[in-house]
Image 1 (spheres, rainbow, N blue to C red):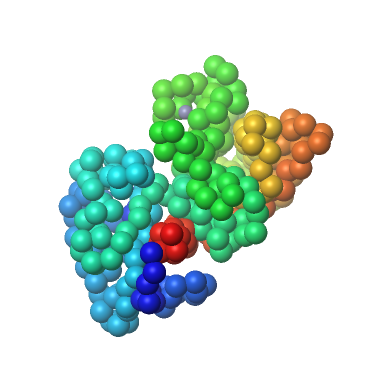
Image 2 (image 1 turned 60 degrees about the horizontal axis):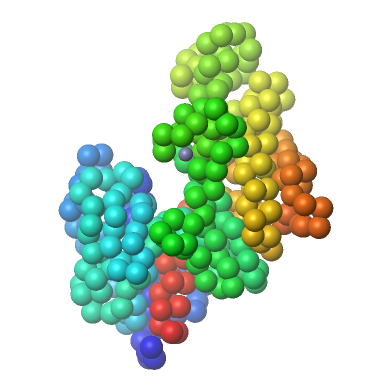
Amino acid sequence: MVTDRKDILALDYGGTKLSAALCGYGRKEWKARERCFSQKGASAHNNQEVMLQMAHRLVESSGADLAAVGISFGGPVHFPTGMIRLSHHVPGWEDIPLRDELAEEFGVPAVVDNDANVAAFGEWSRGAGQYSSSMLYMTISTGIGGGWVLGGQIFRGADGMAGEIGHTIVNPGGAVCSCGKKGCLEAESCGPAIARKALARLTREPDASPILLEKAEGDPAGITAAMIAEAAEENDELSILLLREAASYVGSGLAMAINLINPERIVLGGGVSKSGGVFWKTLQQTTEYFILPQMQADIRPAALGDDAPLWGAVAMAEKLLSQ
Ligand SMILES: [Zn+2]
């Protein structure tokens, strides 16, 4: 597809916020961007109305000459048809033909995929995965997601579900996961899982961590993974133990993925990945312990933060235009 138009519109339908941004083709800085928090109880219809207003405002105020729209969506997407299967956060997205709706709205080609794949592509094209021939992106926050970029392409698998590293079993019979299985990596190592383990320990043993209790103002149910990371930096024994456990499960999951595909690079993002030295050292050691000795584990922190899905949306749109 040849185009002499210059601008890409990137849209990110996240769990808690909606973001829109404009970028010149091939550029690495935003021309304009806007975001807003999704209102509690909002429907797909509300979200779409807000997103369209935001996007039109951006395009008009900056006089953009749109060439394509790239879209990141927080839920499973049927990539070949550009249909949303459902949203994990907002009701009413079932079977919405989002790609075609946006292509019609803006009169240019559009492309949509789920946020883990799109963020992976963002990190590969402009972040910590640049110049790698094969890359696994993994994000650890309220859940654990992942995406593969192999040979410069998002690898989606037969059902568009490739990269679901959060649902590999790292502790058979362990904690119950959102998918219904027990011992998935997500159920053992995502932020809420780490916090839940702190709560369980402090319920049994209220003296186990005065530092954590103080951070949560005396209520163990208010402990978050971020507080545990902070307390670990202050040498709190329980927090260090919890982070080591979570990181060793992450290392086991990563090692399975590395042994199967032997990727050149792993990029790790999400709030829990910022848990500090204890977390990184343990996950590096565990990964190296479980992979074959002929393999390398080049694990790097994500570079684009919350912008990874937007940059990935730009890169997908650029790819669409270059085909
Ligand atoms: Zn699971």
